[in-house]
Image (cartoon, rainbow, N blue to C red; front, side):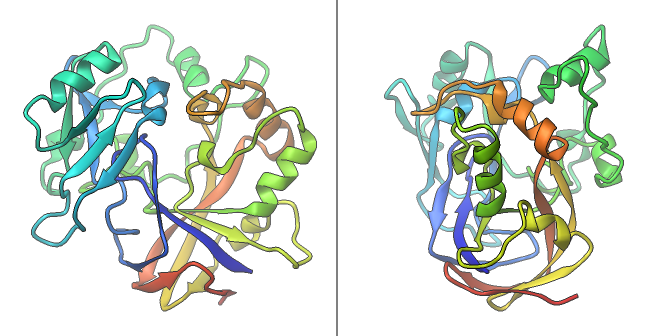
Length: 286
């Protein structure tokens, strides 16, 4: 079992950059989700859950982050051909025009800026119907159990000081993708739909359908880093969006629900920082 890919996503919900190696820290892969779009009307973050067009945008960091500049300059490539830097004064205008909604590209703020991260009260008349739309669940399918998420996420949109959904690392296996593809061969279970930070390959191993499930509650060593695997990852409507060469496909979620309860991959946190690289062997420590 080895690490096949390391991927960071400089702007939340936009496309990723593959990294051959990196120095994994307690904040995850350096440069991962260090920018996000702020909805200027609703005062919350605009993501691919409601704006699938974001997933077709590419984002590339011009410099590496450091303690003094956690959100360095990022170059954006929009599906309409627009290319613009975060340092360009027109960036908010062009992004707002692209999405048809007023937004602002936001760098990370300190964890002490509680109002920046605070979750806004729900505005939907039917919160349950809204949740079903976000998680792409039909009336007969159960909503995911969110009780295992960090408690701060019920008050804030992300862990304070970050733009992560829950934890800094999302691990997925090739075996899980292959299992879903076998169950629904007419769908394209391309890895880019599922946005892992670390993709694990078990080629040659007698892998189970979803081997990462067995890692929950355990620690993994990858390169010089040690990770604690916290929970399975409930999936949302983002997995069904069409972008680039991938078609919009609601059956992706139907297959996920039927085959694996709507989950795919596992969330983890870094308990011992260290260097990791593609090809590193992965050890289950406990």
